[in-house]
Image (tube, rainbow, N blue to C red; front, side, top):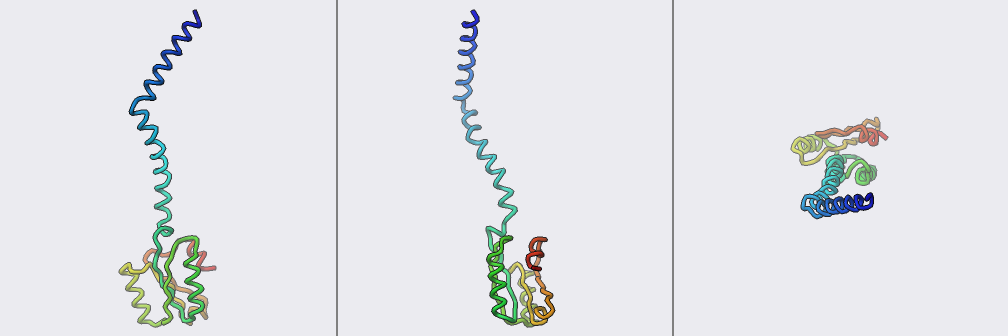
Length: 142
């Protein structure tokens, strides 16, 4: 008698399982759930690192061309962001005003001002709309 009851239970469980698995809602949730979890996991990563996807245009103003090339290469290979650095050798007040206007108009992200006085004193000025985060300031400082 116990064997027949277990067999009947097995038949009922099997029928319910097959009925559930063959339903459209089960198939849809089987496909949709992993895609939803993947989207939820990938979305914050995309918003956290826009600099890695879209390069930001900065200008390096330096009276020493070789030093400017080294700094531009450093920005280009920086792990904290993806930058497209342009080098300007003329460190004049007119050039500074022009670059400040370009930053205000969002045509460039910012500019690094390394005039002769800045090189001699070791005081570098970076001008941008958003500024640098803590990691950027530390990396630029070193």
